[in-house]
Image 1 (spheres, rainbow, N blue to C red):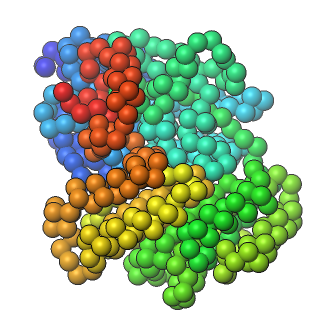
Image 2: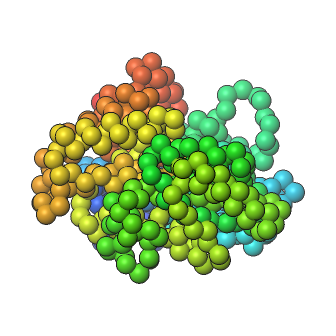
Length: 473
């Protein structure tokens, strides 16, 4: 291994091969669920350097774990405990290579922080539509590797829909330059879509050509209280009807989730929190291409129809950008408030939107019957059928002991219910190392066979992020 480290130092410079000292920032996952041990952390500064590093590791038979901001929620970007794997950190590769306003595209390197990409687009008078809570630290490479979702999927789609081309270093150390800005290219297999969502198991994404949009003329945000999840789904249907493509965000939040925010972050002033009869709230965003007056008129027509329908009991519309940000901050603070409440079991699930009310009724009753006192923190992206259906230990109990003794059982109950209603156990966080057993259990054997065949074809040595997606053999 000494020879390999010497070779890597020659490729990227000794200062960028970290083998000693505190490497916790690279070896421990964001949720602190796992801590591995790397042979070294290697920080290349260019695509040719990435290719040379991969070739050196392939020659030595050494596994590579690609890593961006290390914000994975499924333990997908950290090494195992063997001390034999290279963590390939792409954070030095953070350049914006260019913007093409006429083609509405931006080409960036994989280590670009998402928020920096958003701001660069904004300075050019354009919009990059991916938005999620970790945008200040996650990187574009990681977003692509997991096909990240976020709060605007209902209008703009997941990261896959926001990418037109990729640059990838293969598991053999070759460079595929697929940074086309083409919206139509029907010349064989879509390699771009193959690498997006592959969690670094097929190759290393080093750059991407991203899709931009004109900035909306106006954005309005509303907070609506609804009497049930079924009512929230009815409101979503009305929102599509009245707002059309202007509907960019549609988030649902259960009362207990908002109570946690109110308890641990009282300065945020959660609307309607004192009204016990309001079990659910919805956060809607309307982006309008005409004017604020036009946007407000459409919003008011929607809410009037929703109040008449009975699917909305009360609502407030933000009167300024700062008020809109405050409402979104409440939604984005739910995970932090849940962490303040104590250790918990997280689920990132998707279910067909029409079946979500029945799923929630079934899963809520099942968990409360099987584990008396369990507290359910249910919130997420209802507009695209993605819920963060999280489980908190009973009040006053030992949360750590609850996780130790109940996590496997809770996961089985929830994921069996998800499968029963035609859903997926991972909507936007990926499989990582955390859910490989769930993939083997819930994925079609035919689909698994096809995925393994692709893995063997593109990474025959099995050196790319082993242990993620697939269970180690």
